[in-house]
Structure formats: C-alpha cells, structure tokens
Image 1 (tube, rainbow, N blue to C red):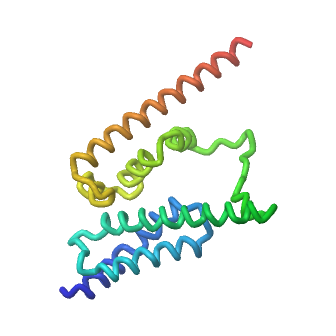
Image 2 (cartoon, rainbow, N blue to C red; image 1 turned 135 degrees about the vertical axis):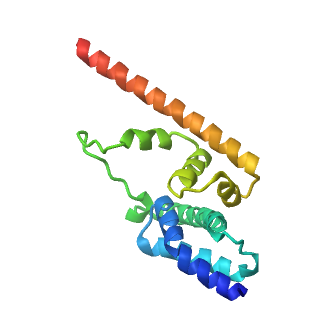
Length: 179
C-alpha cells in the first residue's frame, strides 16, 4: 500500500475517533474542534511516510500536541481581551449548576479534576480512548514501562481522591445526622 493510500485509510478509519478525542479535551465551539482535527490530519499528511501500522495512538499523540498549541493560543487570546476591556469572551464559559443538581457519576469527575493534567490524560487515554499500554506509550511518546508506571500511579492517585471524597461525604452525612 502506498503512503497516500495508508493516509487515506487512516483518515477514513480514525477521523471520528480523533474528533471525539479532541472534543472531549477542548472546551470550545465545534468549529475550533474541527480546526484542531484538521491540523492533526494536516500534520499526518505531511508526515505520512512515518505513519505506523496502527496509526490511532500516533494520531492521538499528534492531537495532544495540537491541543496544547491551541490551548496556549486561546489563553493568549483571552489575556489580550482581558487587557482590552470587559469583553464577554475574556471571561470564558462560566456556568454554575443549581445546588440541587447531582449528575450521576459526578463524584468520579470531581475526583478526576483534582488530579494533575498528566494523570487525567493517562486515565482518559486508557478509559475513554480504550488504548492499551503499548498504544498509550506511543500516544505519550515514551516507552512501554514508563507508560505502564504512569498509568499505575495515576490510578493509585485517582483511588486516593475517590477515597478522600467518600470520607468527606460520609463525615458530612454523619455530621448532619447529629444536628
């Protein structure tokens, strides 16, 4: 198969997976998500001779770098708007849930949010994107052992956060019962 054919096959097979990957990580309008995905496949086209036999983890690695560039750019844009004055885009999206709103599984998201960005990414790659440790290593640009260790440590820290959340909730519930 030629490199052009390999790229075309990777594009057809993985476009939506890369789109979902980017959308879950970029809190931005759909057109900005599409721009990042277009950049990912633009880079993949330019580097099509380097496409591995299993391109999805490699594409996730490219997407991570494109996302980092986009997030930095958005930060610069928001800081500029803030310096220019009270512009609504400078404040980003700030929605506040009703106090009685409880989403199913929200405690997992809360525990995940307290982890470092690196731990969150490792857990998302293996859970949401269903990558194996070998594929995780490709996406992160590290060796298999390092990827396995990062995953192990991230899971351990998530477990600690979940345990901390359960302890806090049970203490609050116990405190309310005695009042």
